[in-house]
Length: 415
Image 1: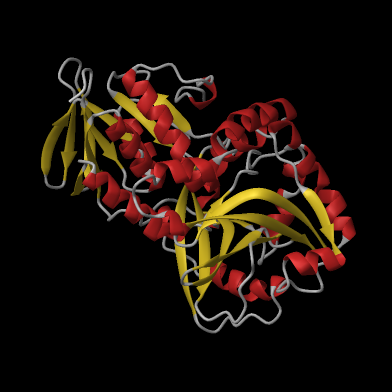
Image 2 (image 1 turned 30 degrees about the vertical axis):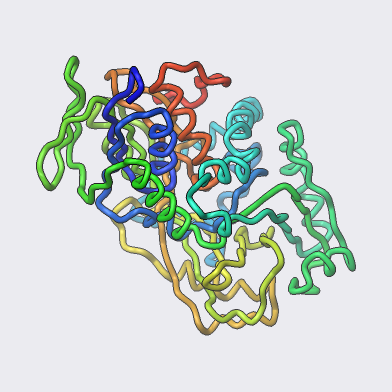
């Protein structure tokens, strides 16, 4: 065992928690992973699978406030807030809209770009030796528009990304058909981002990484953490549904459930569960060559081992509200906007809870109140994309290494 190594418990067996565990294991720490669910469930199971090197913009952008009413009034729109949840969500919404000022958007974009820009290469490094290379693919994203006017209106969203190394190109007509033959002829133009990637099975990828972590010495426990009790000189006591356990250090990487755990450490964070839905079409009859996005519908279609996954939408209803699978059915119907000949009859549907903060930046770093507590949560739509860099940063902080970026944008006390 190396000097200055510790017993570290990672709370969360999703892609963020597993990435943290692997990087901590590489430093020689004794790592235990605790989750009430098996690895690769929750958001790590049902995401769109995209390694989104282009996703450096926060969700709140200049001018968005004027678009929100129309989005909410559209029953097939990309955003919905349950009526019973409006008052609870209101303080978060205010922070969210304030985060859309130009200066704050640019600050968030700089911080996000570090986490996302080389995600495919980072994932390949994370999976090194795990035998999972077949699950990672390099491919462009084709983001399709219904007409030239829509493309022009959306251009500023792409131009805002260019200072951070995102270089999309416009593709039209025959060139677009050659790039993606399955695409509807009603979509005449697209923005194409070439340096992207995806996984053909997000759940299998995370489960494979978890197996790899266990082969490297990690212990995996199926338990629910009920309470965290940091102690000044003797580590952190975790109360679980199967008894207490003591660890020298703890990493809270429990996705949308992390806010409750951070609160037990005395740090309130404005974390919301932003629900996303998917349908996976198991016999679609079409197989796109790459990932395809709908500018009109704000959803993504990804070719996966089990079929064609259509994923997207944002719903705010609270962490414990039941799913509303009408949202998934909207995605199923809208799949034909991209692929007119797709078969939508054989499908499965899913809902997951994205951990979202108002400025779209995750919390990565140490607790400001308790030594030995670290946070790695709040990655909203880009948890899969950001996981390898997040794990590396957490390992650096635990080891006392100075990361090569400014971590202030990710601080827990920035709100």
